[in-house]
Structures are given as structure tokens and as C-alpha cells.
Image 1 (tube, rainbow, N blue to C red):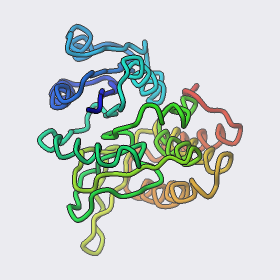
Image 2: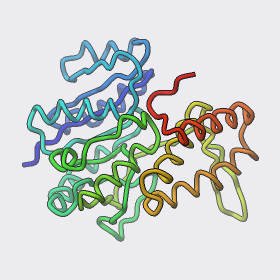
Image 3: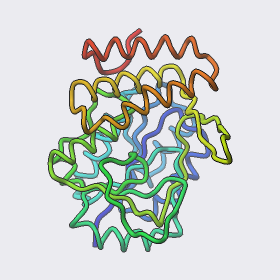
Image 4: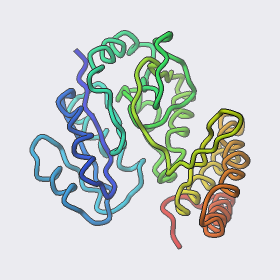
Length: 275
């Protein structure tokens, strides 16, 4: 049987995070929580003091990439085959775990990263080949993860998942997602936009998140691989920017941080934001 451990990244968690993680902690062999919080609250202390979890304190926010690397490193030290990576607020489809596990067993030799769909299901397909996938709800082959080169900690947050997809591609490793099963996951603080009976969303990120999104999108497109990152770069620079201008608040502050992010990208200045 596959040995699977989970890795969940905490950041100023609320009490709902406990119930989220508890839905899958008993499904895996080892349940790791990695705490990126600047200040530890009662939820952080719950995980730290509960022997059901392996608690890793990052001593402040070191970024999602560093936290995932630390969690997967621990699972690697315990000889786990795969890591289930989860955001703290993502809901895992616990009742479907056996079916998901069987599909992972079926495709583990072909795909190095097997994710779940996000907020939707398509039972007509088993697995869909993609160039990259979000970090939450992924079953990652740990050996292949190290072969590809781990998460890029200099990106800190945002586009870490796209960069990992690029690393997998360069290592000739495949990524797919199980379209018949999904996590429940929210990106940003979305504002629904209704046009011609269709619904779109403005992501409504905080100003600091816009800094990272635009800095990393620009850097990866211009300095790593224009072809691989073209789709997301154009979506960021045009579609997301237009929706932010029209529908979101704090536009001046967000534009200021976007400009700062683009300037730092042009200077190839990465890492944690430094005002």
C-alpha cells in the first residue's frame, strides 16, 4: 500500500481549520501542519499540543513554498511515498477517499502529481492531463518532487504552483487531476460578476497579494519561460487587472502595490516583500 502523509499550511488559522484538518487526518499515515503564523493563536496551540499531529513552527511567515518544503521534507524523512498538500481552509471530500485512493494507485506510475478538481466535478472523465495545478488537494510523489527540485521559495507565495508545474515539465513528469472528485476551495475574496447569464469573478485580493501575483507573473514570464507562463501572464495583466479596476475597492492601494511588484520583478528582486 502507498504510504501517504498530509501537509497543511497554517496562517493565522480560525477554529474552522481544526474541523477541516480533522476530516482527513485519520485517512493518512502522518498528518503534518506547518505554521506560518506571525503570532500563535489558540488554534496554532491546539495543533502544537495535540499528539495526533506533527507540528512544525516556521517562526513567522516564511511563505507558502518554504512551508510546503518543510512539511514534505518531514514526510520524506518518514519514508512516505506521497504527500497530500492542503490549504488550511480547503475542504477535502472525505467520503470519497477510498475511490480517490484507488485512482491514485491506478495512475501513480504515470502521473507524478495527482490533484483533485476545484469546486466542480465531471464524472465522465477519470483523470485530465494539465501543465500545472493548484497546491491544495494534491497527491505529490515525493521522490519525483525532489527530482523536479522542490518549491521555489524565492517566489514566497502566488505562482508557486505554476512554477512547480514548470519544474515537473522540465523533469519530464506528468501532472493530472481527478475530474470526478473535488475540494471546496476559495481563491481570494471573490466578487461575482454577472454578464449574459454567466458568472465571472474578480479575485479581490489584498494589496500585498497583488504585489506577489504581479511580481511573480512578470518574473516567470520574462525571465524563466515565456511560452509556458504566457496564458497566466496575459490573464493577470489584462483580465484580472480590468476586473480589479472596475469592481474592487482600495484600487489606488492595489495599483501602488502592483507597480511595486512589477518594478521588483524587473530588478529580479524576489523573496518576502520588504517595504
